[in-house]
Image 1 (tube, protein in one colour):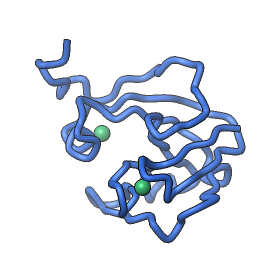
Image 2 (cartoon, rainbow, N blue to C red):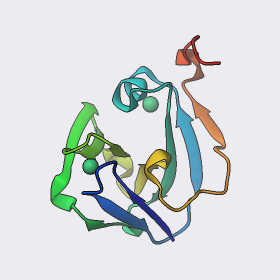
Image 3 (cartoon, rainbow, N blue to C red):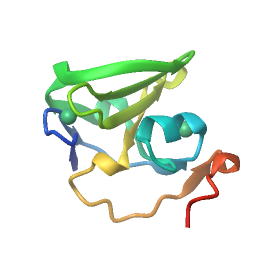
Length: 119
Ligand SMILES: [Zn+2]
Ligand SMILES: [Zn+2]
């Protein structure tokens, strides 16, 4: 099981199942939302993701048709990315994990947008 939380601690979650896939998305929208070069995600079954605290502190934003990103409305930490056409899956931001993830990110998405300023 993996535990995670936002920066301010209002939102806490548990992933009670396996991480099936990890990805690092370099698209412009992930850069904007994360305020960073990329958005690293762990792909899990939606039924394994449990908001154990602060579900009412989660804001949701439809960044494009059928895609919803969630974040803490207190501190702004990005939490999930989800496609409506695959709502049985959820991509949880690896940076909000409290339990160390021992694996490596295995997939890169939208590498064409990788910024040149990254070392
Ligand atoms: Zn927060
Ligand atoms: Zn992206």
